Length: 162
Image (tube, rainbow, N blue to C red; front, side):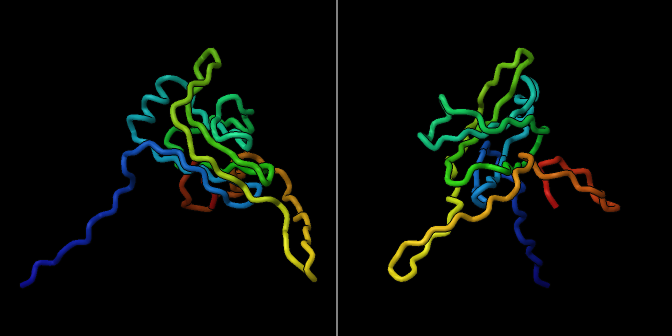
């Protein structure tokens, strides 16, 4: 009788603390967070977890750049959508906490993410043609809440979309 081998289980995470930005389209950037339980514990112990998005088009450091969006996120948030952004800009994220006095303390920074231009460029008859694509309507920085919760659907943080 042969021994049946079980397939190795994939890890739910790698116990690394990372914040990664991915461009979804010219006006939407997706943030992926993987944080250890210890990191989340320390973060929540010190204040409210805050996820920031900066426009870093002029340089890839967040220092001295304007905050575009700042969101208080629920503990153990795994992802977030930033919507209604300006096309053709480069963004960077930061995760930290805001203490009781309102001071923001940065703990983790993301990669820069360059959104494409909102223009379509092509050549016609030897000439460069450019047309602006219509901008989608500006929306909240996080996915809208489901209008009706389906029966049996678990409560998920607002950063999840179905």
